[in-house]
Length: 356
Image (cartoon, rainbow, N blue to C red; front, side, top):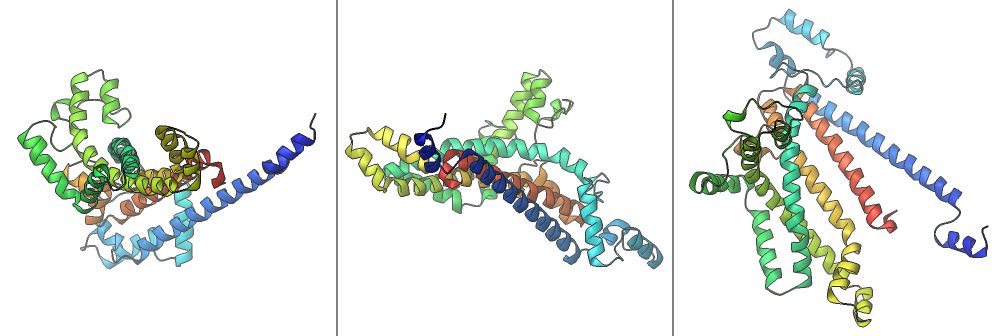
């Protein structure tokens, strides 16, 4: 039976359960509305980009030797003679049906192309963000807790290099040193030609080589992956470490930290038990955004390492005036970005309920 104490507790924590459920439902509907509006805006932007860029998709499709009649017939068949709002309605309807169009470069549906290229980017980005978190978060905490001392100076120098040195230059130097000179890693590509017959079950080379029960192929795939992932991870670690340092410094200057120290709590408990949990929200946000950036396709890294990922696919499509593929890839990247932002919000709420 609920007594006065229970009612008081409910008031302190935000009201009766039914009211909290109602507020939670309203927030859920509000969030769903924001997502729907964002997706609609993304759809509109990609559509307008396709119509405003000085690239004629018909020329890419027909070539510059097509007759005027052929050109006009193709224009009518593709609906390009319709008013702009009707073109957008048709475009949105096709997207909702999962049809991103057909690539003029590969001749395949764009969605099939993306399904083929995206696993390579996912594998590369996931290992890179793993490196970024493993080195960036502890590095930022150590720098903040040793502000002005040598660990702080070292971290600031390392992160400055990560920020300022062009990533393509790091890739070239990495290939020269670790592949050509030391032979510690494999060269460009995802796997040696000896293992090209490994069945593509998931598209993730490490997983597929395990499924194929080929330890040699797995090690070869790992040797191809480790260098580009480390270079991207270095850049991600620089970003994450700087944000972690700033967030930890902000928390360590709060009064409750001083109170905890006055009470005699140990240094480790003050840092990891009090300051770090409260600094988690911005750290989670920057990790998620860094991962989203990596999933967009690290174009330069994928180009240098001949990595057949989404960034390389979009870039090659752009160079070949394959506007349908470019817009499809851009749309998928935008949806990924929105999804990861939502995930960051959820993680932030879990880490700190005050964010609600």
